[in-house]
Length: 156
Figure 1 (cartoon, rainbow, N blue to C red):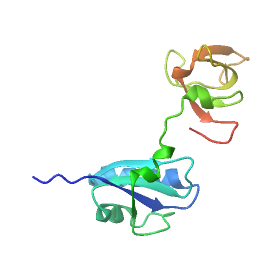
Figure 2 (figure 1 turned 90 degrees about the vertical axis):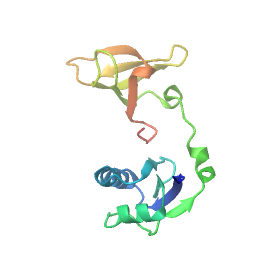
Figure 3 (figure 1 turned 60 degrees about the vertical axis):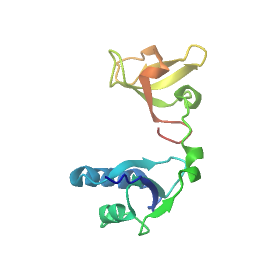
């Protein structure tokens, strides 16, 4: 039994279409049970998606006919080239007043709102719920929210 290692490949896409291409690629991988370990988009790297697969041929077969893919074949790269982009940032560090968030845990799960205050020492945010009939600020742990859009210009 031979054990093949997965390799990382970069696929050039239209800038701004990375997530769409990744979603199409994901559906093809699931449909064909292709030997793909991961599909990665990096918010700081525009115009590229990264795919971890057993071979270049697997990726080239999957990307056939997908709009917004700019270059064929996929380019093999070393993980060291993108490792500086893979550092996890704590949500409390990137959260700011005015950000749009969704509550992802607790009794208010699924409700969206706008951040009106960030308390970094308590790791809490005060959110004004957008679905309430009147302004209703609540304090919630940062572990129970995800950022939908940021005033700084990016979504997480």
